[in-house]
Each structure stands twice: as C-alpha cells, then as structure tokens.
Length: 265
Image (cartoon, rainbow, N blue to C red; front, side, top):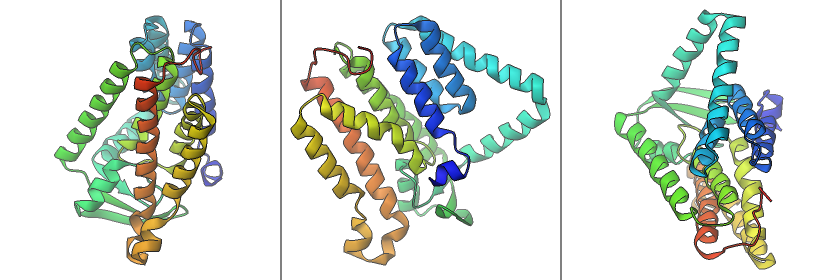
C-alpha cells in the first residue's frame, strides 16, 4: 500500500512481465511487453536474458529494441538535460548502499555487517534509511554473485519442461537479492511465482512453503534477541525468504520434471 501511495509502478511492471511470459511464443508481443516494462523501470530488461537463453532470441532482441526506442523517445520529448540529471543521480546511487528495515538485499545485509561509513541517515515513511559507502569489493562481489546465480539457474533448468517458469521465478528472486537496495514491493513477483512452483509439486509442498515462509517473515530477530536488532530484523528474514524461493526453484529444476509448463502452457 505504501508503494502505491508513493506512486511506485511495481504492480503494473509485474503485470507486464507475467503477461510477457504467458505469451512467450509470440516474440513481438513478449519482447514488446518486457521492453515496455523496462522503459518504466530498467530492471525488467534482465528478463530478456531468459528469452535469449531459452532459444527465444527474437523476443529477447525485441525487448532490448523496444526499451531503447522508448528511451530515445523520452529524450526527444523531454530533452537531454533531464536525462543527464537522472544519469548523475543513478551514478551516485550505484556508489552507495541503502540499509533500511524494508530492504531484502543481501548487499544491504553485508554492508550493515561490515559497519561501512554512513553518508546520511533519513527518516522516511518506510523507516530510517541509512546510506552507506559502497566499496569496490562489495559492488564487484554482488555483480559476480548475481552472474553466478543466474548461470547456475540457467544451466540446471536447461532441459526441464518448465524451464521458462523456473527461470522467471529464479530471476525474480535473484534481482532483489543482489541489488544495492530492494524495497518490499520487489518481493511481490517472487511471492506469487514461489507459490506457483510449490503448487507444481504437491499440496503438501504448498503447505510447507506457506508455513516456512510465515515463520521466516515473523519478526524473530527482534522478538528473540531484543530490540537492538530491529534495524536489520526485516532484512534478515526477507533475505532468508528469498533464499527459500530460490531453493524451491532449484529443487524443482533438478528433481521435478512436470508434464506441462506452468506459465507458457
């Protein structure tokens, strides 16, 4: 609700991503939808990698082309100075790490544990946000971790009948897991996909998934260890929750060949 109040387009982006993979066999539509989502928020362009790795090369290139088209159109309509200012903010953002209660990023957790120098502290509707300096080793480590994770997921799911759905679920968990900061609304997509993957195993798996997720989402660090950890309690449980989702994807990839693709039909 807070994301909607602040004008976050995440629900629209999730709709476009899911619709793109539902029509994955129609390259112009699938690629166009991902490109449109990337024009709103750049992160969805990473899902084009799934198309490329799944033999849907046309859809992948269309996604990139559509996003570039909208970027150029935006420059033409609003002018370069506005985009130059945006790129400068983006450059500054890449050099820092945001640590906040609502973050689900492993990078935020590592930065907090490493006690990196704070640049500023801001009180926001989502809680206190600490902006920390991001050293080179942390940025490189997060990028390598994402690449390795994506490579493992693509490799393990290569011959699986549900490869497209599994890769979408895995990528949706990997992206917020290794971002410099991940807001809670980034978790909507892996939440839905995690339930879908659990459902493809059995009703018992859905029950286990629900119970374990509820336990992890419970504020156990603060409750068990005291108020001193309240600043990272949500980060801890959300990181573990994302790892749970990613683990589900890998388990299904290796041990559960299904009869029909969950998303592509």
